[in-house]
Image (cartoon, rainbow, N blue to C red; front, side, top):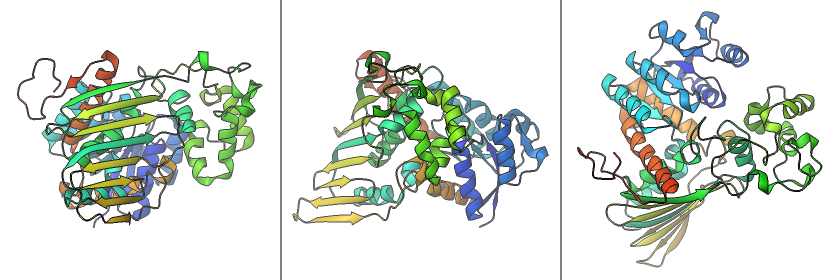
Length: 429
């Protein structure tokens, strides 16, 4: 397989992850990049041996140089996806796009249309579709091992410290500057559930809110920053404990610590906590995204699915129970328990998954497998190697937006069939 030349738009943690996999396997090579942060831009240029004239401060400068590669990795902030994706698609680049596609339906539809208009491959980074665990689970369902799938119960355990890091102190803490939690974090899971069912749901309801990370929940004696706090040592969300603890762990040094500071020394971390957003008390931030949410889905054939996202868990693999007419599957991200109602037989299937669930662990092998599949698809011209396209990702995003509307309005939202030519009254396309 020939090596795929790539451009990297956004050299943050996610962009670095995908580009490093391409270089590590030799299947791809970054030949140009765009990154507004000068420190990150210089570091990425050195790491990937990108010449200075091909290391741009803005993606528009990269695009102005005309097509420089066969494919693009776009990993900018969520609200900055549409411009570079559409422009590079119009130049013929195949695109690996970090999730979510865009914060709203209109922009995501523009992206999907650009992919279709230019006949390019666009893979949104729904990495859960690509894990070894998912492939075994999907195979069992498709082989009819539990008969017709009737009901699913799925839990996403975000993790108490991950919620504090990314969704209270971090870049994804506000809906108006990023997007709702269900889109920025849990569009992975909604997309994964749609993938397992093989279709989108018909009706959706949802409940949830911000229960804990708010001023009135602050313990007596809490200060605005952890370094000034008299109760920090007994707080489960202590920034001092979390980020200083990362110094001894190479995986944690990449994430989450690199989001806090590039100075991976005790002095560097303490300075970042003293002056930066990650040192703030979780009860004194400007966050508004939910810390718990449930989504109920009903499919056209009457099958149902319940999804729960919660901050108040360890950070570990998702847990899923799949209930069928002939059997039962209980998965924990690495193994699957299968019970056959017809024979009474029970077995535990080892899926071969060894990686952890976090970004530092590559999302259970999904990050690497997605990049590998994308590069093979580009090199061979075979889109069938990808497990979703722009239209499929747009469809699963629309489930997320419908669920958010249901939560905000206290209603049940009906989704129109994907190929419907006309909207039903009150329905969403």
